[in-house]
Length: 278
Length: 315
Image (tube, rainbow over the protein chains, first blue to last red):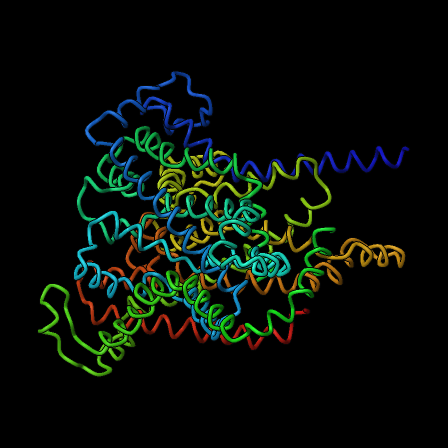
């Protein structure tokens, strides 16, 4: 009994230490949030004023309804992110099914080719992509941006890991009933794999929402800008208005933090699974 | 369970029937397979594979983007020779090598955190979430907030260092000797979450009886860590190392927003320099030669790791 109590005390102490280390990970976010609600003159006051003495909700109004059309940028981000997620999940789920459950000629070789493209840094092919986009009239369009992020090796790989765990019996049984692969895919496999598909959808949403490089290279018109591009331009052009820059940054990451906290179980399990079995 | 048995019985009944239709089934199977992977394959071919070949072709020319492709000349290996003499490019390669250091550093810290969190804390789920937060946040927002935190004269980090008696704290991003260190610190901070999650998953796969046997022999926590945890996690470590190094060559967004490669070229990396050559100096030919060199380097590094893994990874 005594021993048990001592062990628990040890666990409590370690929990407290780990929480202190965890604060290092949270502090930049808390600082950002707190600075976004302060008067400009208090942003850098030291010792740090974690809770603003004078709450400036007005900072958010100035960012959102100021000179920059933030609502439009936000809408652009939502549009691009949602459509990319839908397209990418469809493409990846289909490919994952083909690569895990259909025995066709050349399957392994084709999968290896797809997998090998993971090695290629996106920046290495920016010049040719840029040329192609100009020729195909995809430059400076949302469609171009959506296509750019919709063919994901990681998505295909991750979903294939999950799909491989489905027993072939289910698929063979459905085939005996005369079902085509298409029917099996959307009546058997997709419903079974909703958690896996949600995992990838959340990840793709987060990655696309955060994408800065795509819009930076492939968009030019201001009215097409996504939130990441807009925040960066806003921070360069607003010079010393740090409280407003922080309010903009909080606005850019808040939707993600909410989605992450709601879906954290899926995200963390998905990452763990996709990684370890690789 | 019952469902599975029923399936098996059903299968053997229809087995003969299936054999008769084997040929047309085979054709259908192939056709269905190609239909399902076609969107992914077409997308990958158009957006990745064809561009690689274009980059390869362009890398042998002196093409400058604004002048149209007709005016480009074939220059053979000229771009590659220029690269070998180009001081900012060489500096970018060296910086990339320093950035690789962040990978083992992140992995070591994540491993320790994972081992501690795995068994010794309450609220395990809560810790996973907070350590993972930087990973899901936008790099743009992270870069902007760190510019302020690292501000040389009134940033909270230096205010803190001065308050504990360090009179001349580094100027971080503004100082060419410290800028790359700052980039490494931020990189470690953002990637610990991912490594931690993967290590935690790896720890779940180590059979508990290994530890029980070691405890019966009176092994200390350190001995158990060194002789069981580390070797059993070696496939995970290999995965994290290989993907971590590939990712370290891809770190572009952080550099663009945080430092634009500066001060000087002190934080420029290959992909940043490539971007600058391609989209600011419009030297498409030269930028493509850099791209091809980068691809070659990644191939070699990955190949070395695959060969090396046989020596230290236990499967």
